[in-house]
Length: 291
Image (tube, rainbow, N blue to C red):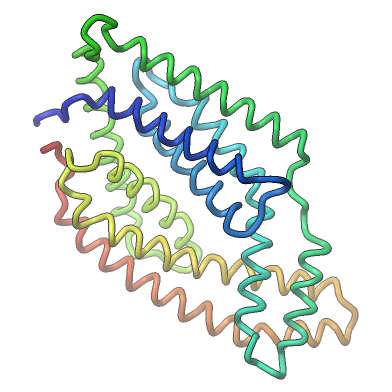
């Protein structure tokens, strides 16, 4: 097995790019983030956590844990707000052209906005962000110490260790996804997480591992399909919760939204399962080896 050249430098550059991306997004935030800004922030944090996990055993085992955990915790703090944003958008879009249910959907969307969890306080957000930046700095320094200051080249042993660790983690992620098989409705979200982590790892490996050319588009397709099914499931849960907190007349009106939503969820699950089968067929043929 050949090792990809300059993987230590590639990792350091990827960490720098992800930090710059996060800072660019944060510079555009002037209050609690929402909508597409919140979505972009959460994606950036997922990519940071995925890279930290993938390369986390260099220079020592577990060295990426602080960065992984800091990115994960900030993303989770923002997740409740994102879930509510998506639920409101789906609710309004699904019934926009349904004259019998549109008014009820608008009313429930307004209740979601009013009664929903506001997300972390500004103080909590600042503390989580400061922790993330400290973890970034520690990882930057760790990778800088792996380079010879005179030649600018990385320690050969670190290169071999990192290549071995990344390859092992990618193969393990592919095996977990393959072994999960085509998921049922309850298994779609966990399978989506497995697909996402494998995709991010293969995108990091880039041309040094030829598998991304065939696998990444299928992983992205499954992520999108499973994500849509998950969003619908969460919306259905929100509608049921709102109905349960309504008076009798309001409860009946809210429950009228469920049949079309349940039908949409069933179709979304079927599409995600079909996407999963295409992905698993291709995964069986993929060799995750360095070129």
